[in-house]
Length: 166
Image (cartoon, rainbow, N blue to C red; front, side, top):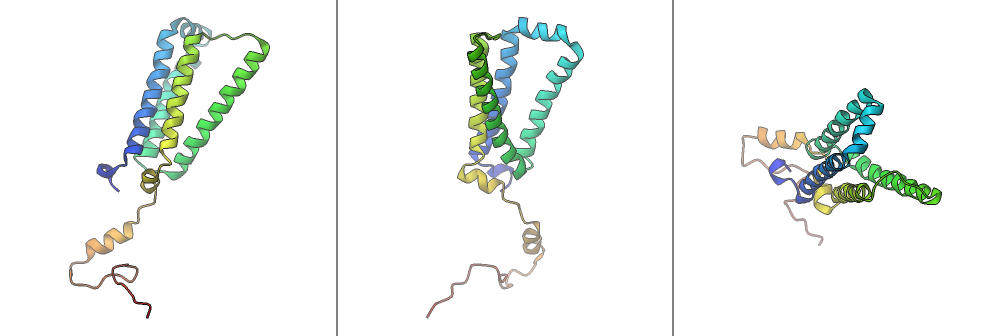
């Protein structure tokens, strides 16, 4: 499969991941007072994190979608479930102690972004997406392309002939 035949589920993974990044960015803009307080506490560290986080995510999407790295696909799914566990565990602790720092709007953005990321990660495991991550064998392409004789017999591994079981 080349880029023209990229499965729809892989394209939707890419789009949903970028949509999740936009939701996180909108959350920071809508809740600017909290973002500004983080800037005031640790300007350099917070700035570096705010620049590195989207860069790492864009690199990760490129690794999964364009480079078709299978271990990155599995890490994406594992990371989403780990994030959901941490979020659920964190909310459990906050609910138990009876206080929360965030607003309801932040919670809505967090649930929306997490849902987009999880749905995107699950799309990487649909039937057509699994084929996208199968390693491409370059030697078959070179062997066929290097053959100038079109009347040559098919290779031994070809399934073009039918054998009878009589």
